[in-house]
Amino acid sequence: MTTPVDSAPQAISAAKVAKRKIVRDMSLCILCGRCANVCPASAIKFTREAKGVCTHCNLCAEICPVKAIDSFEWKPEPEVTVPHYAKLKSYKDRVIKFNCVMCMECYERCPSKAIYLDNGHLFIKKGDAKASIINCSLCTLCVTSCPTNALRFELGKVVLNPDFCVLCGECSRVCPPATMRLKDRYPEGACVMCGRCVKSCPVKALSIKQVSWDGAINDSCVRCGTCSKVCPTGAIEFSPITQSKPAVDISKCILCEICASDCPTNAIPIKVNLPQRRLMSHSITVNRDQCIGCSLCVDACKIALRGDHAPELKDGLAYINTSKCIGCGACATTCPTDCIRLVKVYSTKHVAGKADEVVILP
Image 1 (cartoon, rainbow, N blue to C red):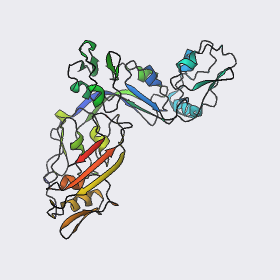
Image 2 (tube, helix red, strand yellow):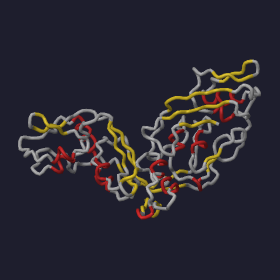
Image 3 (spheres, rainbow, N blue to C red):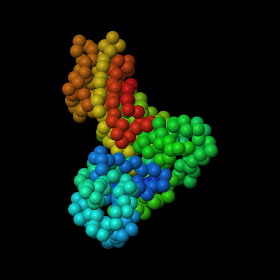
Image 4 (cartoon, helix red, strand yellow):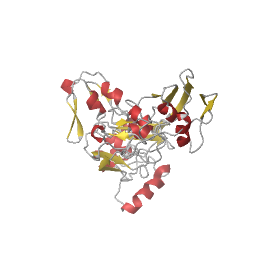
């Protein structure tokens, strides 16, 4: 049985949605964390899996009053910037020299706690911090969720009025990159577009650019409908019986990139910030009391598995071969009687908030 589809365009509106954002080129970023150190709004979340290891942010060299730590802040030509810093990722040459006066400023202020005392001398612990970094994406979900209008989106940035804030924490609960948090009397973690991170980056991995999306979804789409399920603004609609691909209403899109992050086949491009979310586990069940044996789940899965299929009909009812199932959800979304139920459990390590940990299809 084939699935009828229409020939309607996948974007409801021909317009584009666009925002100015901080763009990070991960092919250049050396994960030093310097940008996070200088961000006045704490809108960059820099995490380290290995504690107490130097990330080469250069703060110790900048604050040392006697220059006992060599600084690698210089102005090389653009073509040698990246090789230079890449070579220094082992930090073999960075030591605390004999002229150290033991003022302990570097020890106290090192954001990684990588400077330690041993027999009355200071040393730098080197190695792989296994770091990760993510910026506020200016998705404005914190703004739309704020019940008191303490947060506003004006002139391309998030503006805070602390007098209106009641510390409800809703902004931090919905933040996809999890940069928002409550601090004392007000929330922090929303980008104010000051550009300090861009200026501080030693390898020019950061820039301010106009980011846009026209709602295009490429042909790797397997019609699972996950994007329409997770979109926080209802900008994506999908009817598997009548549409070849999900339709995007650009007027509702806020470029939060949750749909792109959750897409199992990268059919929606990640423009800036959120990484691809890791599917930790999935479970799929079939209520055969509701199954009508239409075989639409088999047809849907053939698209996802490129000819193969996990669902199969036995005695006119659907069964799922879990060894083949990739957890995309195409079968559950396509089933006209909702007899197939898929539960996806995503990692919240890098993407959280409004991007739910558990997604259930249909």
